[in-house]
Length: 346
Ligand SMILES: NC(=O)C1=CN([C@@H]2O[C@H](COP(=O)(O)OP(=O)(O)OC[C@H]3O[C@@H](n4cnc5c(N)ncnc54)[C@H](OP(=O)(O)O)[C@@H]3O)[C@@H](O)[C@H]2O)C=CC1
Ligand SMILES: N[C@@H](CC(=O)OP(=O)(O)O)C(=O)O
Image 1: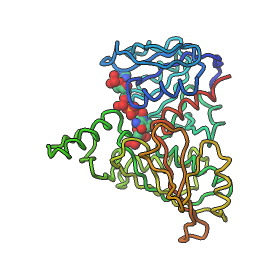
Image 2: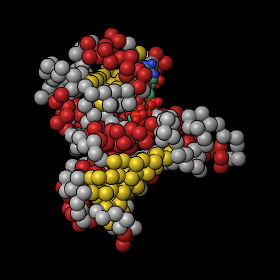
Image 3: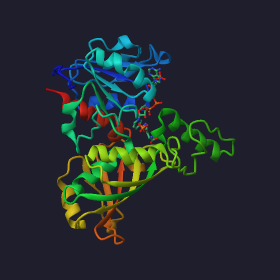
């Protein structure tokens, strides 16, 4: 079944999870892209009902305060687009109400990504997949998004056989409470005080934790599994082999990735550079002579996926190695979802 309801030029937009790390970024991105909304509805849990959120305005919505409403199944009456970032459980609970109200749910959680009737979309890679949704479009995992943005221009030169990726994921990937944990543990560590470990499995201050999301039966983590299966679905190529190791690092914001790619034919460093020059959403930051490469600590608040340290991987016949950085709350979540919403506009 595909969607028959036409999208108005000035849609009513609900932001579900408006008080969270991604939700707050949704507000910023809607303003930055001047999304042509006629109304923005800020929704969160009962805990936040009545809270005020400063909104800079977009489309027909003037700048001013938005009052957070408790999200219930009735919240979606009259809504055209519902941007969801409340976690997988809540997305599953609300899906029926959202779709029944005639809204398109663009969901940031992992709830529906691998469902056959749900497109998994990165606008730079597979924009046409929005055409077959039946009320729900999934936003991929943040680490997957920035990797496929960097892989697509190379894949268009020669199909990819295998990718080996290690991630360096910011604390904010765990949401607003995780950012707070990095701040407070760092302060307490420096003051010689006892550290509270609540969000992550271990201390994150001055540490790296090779464990994101839950462990699977094969001893990989679910975060690693997501990078494997989501890459194949987005790129539309089940034959791409992906080996991932996902690591949490004490960086506040922006994920980084070391990526080794093996191709089925020759892709020179020069050809890759040329492809990146014209690719949507990519900035190359790569000059060894001036120590220029992307670094997560310096790229918070940016939209692009940054590529550097581009070089030949001499361990395979046709291989490249690269370093990829993006603001995972923007391109890995809020920005990618609003770009999907833009694709739905008439
Ligand atoms: N952080 C990141 O880098 C990325 C996050 N995501 C996904 O986005 C989602 C949210 O993540 P993030 O913003 O980081 O998390 P946060 O913990 O920062 O925010 C969670 C949000 O969900 C709301 N919420 C919780 N329970 C309910 C409820 N019962 N009803 C309505 N709203 C509720 C919270 O509202 P309240 O304040 O009232 O509790 C808050 O607005 C997750 O699915 C995550 O997997 C995806 C990619 C990247
Ligand atoms: N797991 C990511 C963020 C996230 O929420 O991912 P997902 O939407 O796939 O659960 C991180 O911790 O950096």
